[in-house]
Length: 253
Image (tube, rainbow, N blue to C red):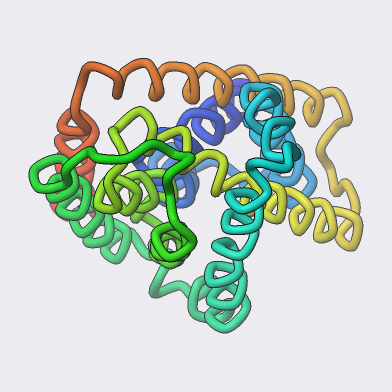
């Protein structure tokens, strides 16, 4: 039960904080010698974080249905295509032991930190989300491709990309989550598909429910925290955390 709760908290927090969910979900079981809980559990964690982002941004999502915002909605949809194409093209590489190794994740944590630091240091806030052009949105969509590598962080790469395109930090975070909604939904649906094919294995239904609830609550908290945090603070604290984690991995593993 403690393993289930810990993994669900990690999934919920790291899915949205710019510290890499895939990296942490590779690292945590190695650190604590956890048994793989299986595809069913993974699917329910993804569904929990999907529910968190949908409920938190329900007004923004409904707002995208407004005729005046159809251009933004279309741009967000199209901007997810690069990540989908890259995901299928690099599927075998992404699942390889090399990419999921502790060394590789340590280096991608460092690379993502450099990107986030550069965005904080050099990006200039000039526009709002509604002023995001099609080209700028597509650029952020390509930045999302970087997050296919464990350790980079989808939110970290897309927030940085949005900042380079002229959005304020908190606006960049909001835009990142809206842009990532199809990706999070897609990950959840793929996980459910894998779950249906593999079955529920040995994990109890009540444990699946607990995983869903905990990942939902921690994910909702992470979204709310990050948007409010970036209204007044830079991403420096996350950069430092990532670098410390990378150093620990390289030294201890």
